[in-house]
Length: 116
Image (cartoon, rainbow, N blue to C red; front, side):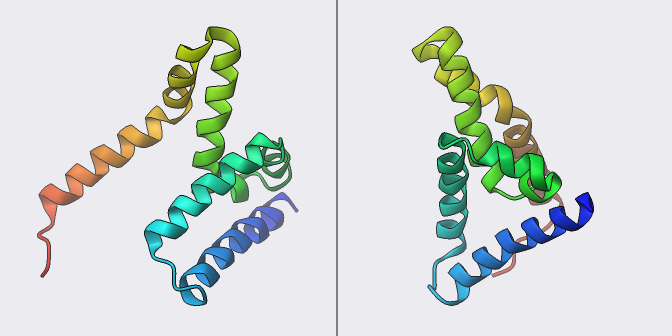
């Protein structure tokens, strides 16, 4: 049953993104930014952790989880280290994802030739 809920929740997040692209004519950058902010807002109201507990990978894989991780890490570390903890927390939870994106983007840029 866990896999089914993960599939449904992840699919609903993707459907929302597709509706934003098709109906509201937003660009992919706007949709991505909106999802990151939505994940942070849901985490601010303590709702995203419940969604992760319920849906597992269906809630941790989409880009909304990145916004959740940014705010979650910042809030945890700010309680411990004050203002400097905000910067520490942001990068503590998301550094692996950011580093992977940079590394794989560089590898793809070296291997493939751009068209156009």
